[in-house]
Length: 475
Image (tube, rainbow, N blue to C red; front, side):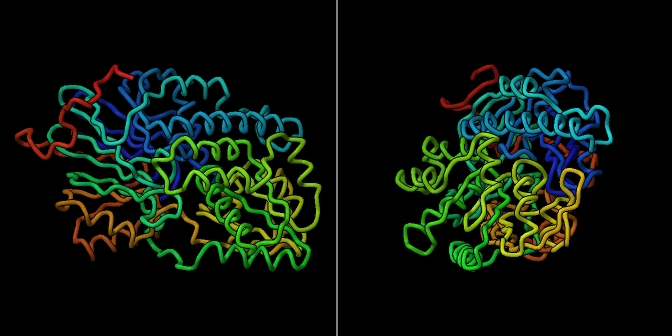
């Protein structure tokens, strides 16, 4: 068997792993690169594997750094299955369409205003490409085996993090190969805890927060303090926010703060059509989260849903105390850019960062208190206060990751640490080696490693056929 790391190496974006064995060639995740220009340019490179030789794609979850390259795959002619959970399917239908529209709009904006170096500027993919990819999604329930052929199968185990998120466990050539996906937190107020693995011969584990522990401070208290301080001086709060997961967490806390009287009754706007659509899905996937139906319904009433461009422009023209939650979470694109242009220069306002900020993004520049940020070809002064709230993270920190790993019955033969900046990945390597005494490797971009098959072809079997098992061809 062979495993090739096509992304998420020394970075938190572009998750893409090529697994070859048992007569199959599979992609685990198919994500976009984000962040610095040299990473984003990888999205335009040809995939280093012939599309016609791919037998399948297995998605861990719907975030674009794990699913956002699927429309490119479809444009290049891929027509095979893309396996995922129903929650991931529902989110991908929102996210991939939104991503395609955004890329088309940004290319058009660049062409009309002449700030692109490319003539004409082109989108990475179109809405048609996204629709073609969505037609390939094949649903699989959690913890139900799917037989890929007589010698390979897989299961999807709940990973917490966001709706539909899964860890992937494959049995191939007598070995178990597991991919953690993005791990959620065991005590997340919304999502349920990730399910631990029983066994893995080879393991790929994420390391987004491999070098830190999350704050024990209550996020609601942190938000309440920021809101109170900003509103007292007549300012407003801009929250660049991931539309899936993080936006709903913010809405949950705002609903609680308003209900308890800990937040002034100021306007709150959710300026993201994608986030508005995603918020509605929490009522349809109640088994995956901890919210009561009353709490799930409250998400949709915690803010005024802003869907149209004209409505968004009207929000940017307002002044006075209010909260604007808008995508994207790292301020790499989307409507939040227009709000930052309008509100970042005013010292009465506050910009609140509520998620991981990858190197090279505007969010990372804001977190570093850059005096200005470049938006649409011009430098915008940042006089607003910038606050970071790390306790809202939907990623496990290193202690929580170690606890999840510690449930595995025996040390894997090899553990590969991915999906983290270099410092975070190396820190998690050290934590695993010192605490669990497992050998660990931090792979590099495009590195390929051989995974020895079982000498006897027999080992721990995670996907034995059962009455509930799927076989390829079923939907």
